[in-house]
Amino acid sequence: MTLSRNQQIAGAFAARARDYERNAALQADVAEKLAQHLPGSGHRKILEIGCGTGFLTRHLLARYPHGDFLLTDLAPEMVMQCRARYSLANGRAIRFAIMDGEAPDCTERFDLIALSMTLQWFADPLAGLQRLRDLLRPGGTLVFSAPGPGSFPEWRAALEACGLRRGVIEMPQLPGVVERETRKVEYGNAAAFLNALKAIGAATPRAGYDPLPPGSLRAALRKLEQDDGARVSWRIVYGVLCAPDRIRS
Picture 1 (tube, rainbow, N blue to C red):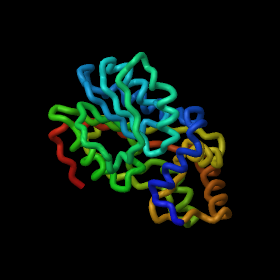
Picture 2: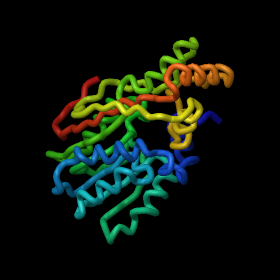
Picture 3: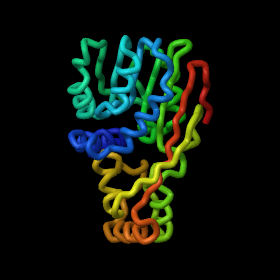
């Protein structure tokens, strides 16, 4: 049986759920920076999409001590990890759910929707953002962080130099971007770059992509090391959308 893309993504993250925090320093840093863009403390009903093990969750709980939280993720194992950390957070109103954030099975409306480093897994990030925006109450806010267009330029260049197709997920220009940054990460060697992505469950390629043969992959990894010493750039964007905004492709 062929797995759907969502099943592949959920399975990849599930397999790494226990080790995720140990290998996701960049994701933790991005969540901390996204927290700087959270609106004031008056928000009551809060939805988090792609909670993972709780990098952004901890900031949401700290910012909104009286919030009513629904924390969701596509991977049941990630929800379980987040629940283990936060279900007993001082008697707070916290619920957990397994949910596809791109097609949320939810009739509630929220004052705040937050997602950090999750949009890249949506088949259509722009349409997914619009569906989430439609879950906002009047005056509500949606905040997000995501890899922006052109992330991993060093890896792209290595593949191109070797005449190989790219499996990198292509992100569109996203609406509501209020800040951009480039984070160049030193992985030590090229194989460690790919292993780091696997360790956080993030090695699932774009839809329709056939993985490279091992020999071709090794050639691209050698080229990356030769040209860039296994330093790879993440181009991160941070966005804020309000309830009345309309998102157009």
